Image (cartoon, rainbow, N blue to C red; front, side, top):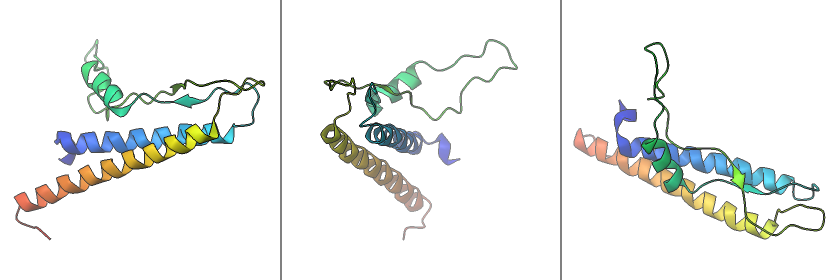
Length: 129
């Protein structure tokens, strides 16, 4: 029932995007000294969420899955821009710190939207805390 409400679906997709982006940032930090490693990041949530909604999967036959229950974002990492060190590594720990702070903010926003949506639903059914 709740997954049919677009606001809750968007908050869930935003949380999934933040978690995936956090995994990518953690991999960058873990490979900060690996020669030849290229730092990665993900598209901004707004761009990936719009892209997934605008380009839904299509079923070509009745037995195929149509992707209608897909939760909404393109979660593929992309190469992050940045200068390379002499050993070919492009991870900047300072950039990763900024990225981690941005990811935390995104996660907190997704939780706030989700909580607000639940509060509105509780008010609508008369069970306000």
